[in-house]
Length: 155
Length: 302
Image (cartoon, rainbow over all chains, first blue to last red; front, side, top):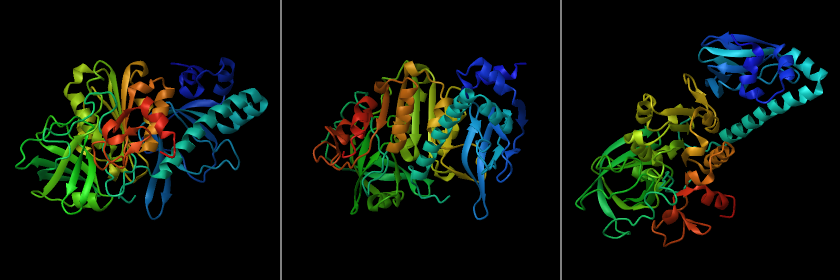
């Protein structure tokens, strides 16, 4: 079985990260699996974790009493999930639910923050990676808001 | 493709630049001649999208066209709209068009029933580089009703599957209810030699697929950036994002083809309504190579 450092090194999110930094970060992580239908996190609950997805598919959802469950994003193999551990008040703002059996490395958010505070160079590297994902998601969300496809179907 | 002119607004998309069909000279009897077809069959794709199968009336056989080209469809007494061919023109013996109801003319076309007459002028424009892509990987990316102009090209590629490397189709729609050509997508997904990924902008209820824009799906298309041909058809914003992303992944801009939509009226490069810089979309497009289209799309005044 491959060690956690090896799993991290092979994941696109950590591509090119120095080995010693990977070792530090690996100290905050552990393997986890979620069955289909199982929640990784739920809106309003404390955001203690950061998820590195290795396989499977997760839907990021919001519940509206009038419309039911609305999926706003899906994430799968090679992606990461959950940024609320990074900034106060450390609470999730969406639900995240596994659609299939999902394998993940789960990091302890407080542990990651502590490593980043203690080693600003590592912190900056990690923050740049997180910001890159956030930028892509923000771009995507903006395009989604444009409703470029049009269409008559009410959602 | 982008939103078309009011009243036409379907996605049409003839083939790209210097590819298969070149500039179309529509119809042996003259490029401006309208022939009368009859509706043979209709199929409701979504609440506002209808597919029409047309067969020629007394005027004879279906005019040969290449995937990506478009016809001007005339709803009698209402108006004319440019609509791309959405079937494999060589396969059915019928003319297939898929239309979104967005204005008076397209609303009239979407209201047609079996046996009703339709005026057809065309085919016009360039086609997708189906032959040029032989020997390479193929990546088709469609958004919304933009799947219609690509459908014929994709069917043709699959009919000669052994001539191509890896073949991928990425499709984005507004919601699960807005997915068009569900039957085709289901059939293509069931094949072992094609990758098909579908995403929707948002989903309510029991949708187990991707949610989000189409660009992240590029990670699922295992085509070789150095040896693939990309064909993009959908809203212009979507095509710009996808083309940029493909460029970052190493796909050369002269192997990316996009289908543009402008206000096409005459269809033969005379009226100038569809002018885009030095190009006339009806004649020089609608399928353009990205290295040709990209500089034009950067000029907002165009």
